[in-house]
Length: 339
Image (cartoon, rainbow, N blue to C red; front, side):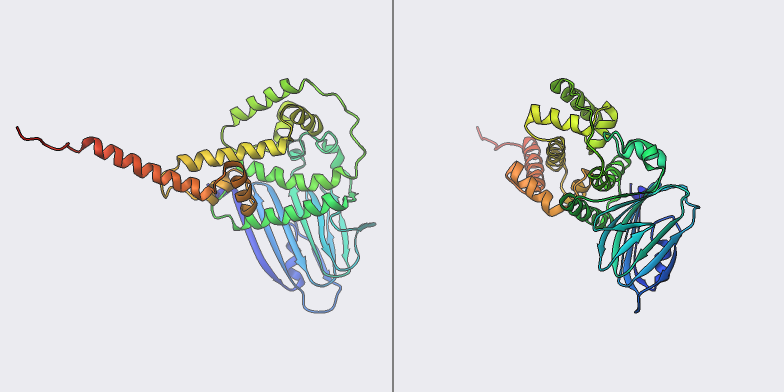
């Protein structure tokens, strides 16, 4: 079950550690700032897809030769001083696109932190489904710099860090279906900041909301209990994220993200309610259904069901014990009477 997820996390003690700043890609590094470099570097690999997050305390010069055949999309998470890639001056949460087989040149004038995902260009249509421009591989064939929206950029940055933290600490591994969900979730963080720099989509066509919702629910029924990302629905049904959102708002009064979260909460509840005592944990089930912020998950769960997930699991254990007692009592002889 855990073979899909590969994790590597280490502390940096010297600039040489940043030569593997992006998982699977070699970077030439030169230290610019004075002092002993300290930092951290973490990689999560999901198949051929990877997410890397690094942080360091002194200025650095980075160069990458044109030997990498994968697309790299990076985000600046923190910077004490100026950061420039090629001729682009980066601000916090900005996104940088490094196409396959293109040389890269970056200068960090002080301590900084970054996130970078690396994957095959052929996966673009899947990972960015529902976003017409972003799902087109041609969008990513030239180097680019996308200025992040201040509010949404900060949210996307925090989500990336939390996703990395929870995947890194995950002891339960990933199934193929949950691995796909996490890849889409990581891509969504990057896409948020890219989309904020693009002109609005002029496609305003909206099919019948109820007909579209019916197709979505049929798709979810076929998916079973595995978590489903919004972009997967957009790809399968050939609709834009905007169209999907408007349909859900019209029919349910809430967006597709909230709807899917409610559905995943219901799946967790059913699994916990039906689980045999000692067969699973709340954490394992929550991760399987795509919840990585366990504190927030517990809040959602309590608000929706009026009980904590541990209580649901406990109720299952009590019910199993009562069922066992009931079964045993059926075979016990009743009180004997004397004539």
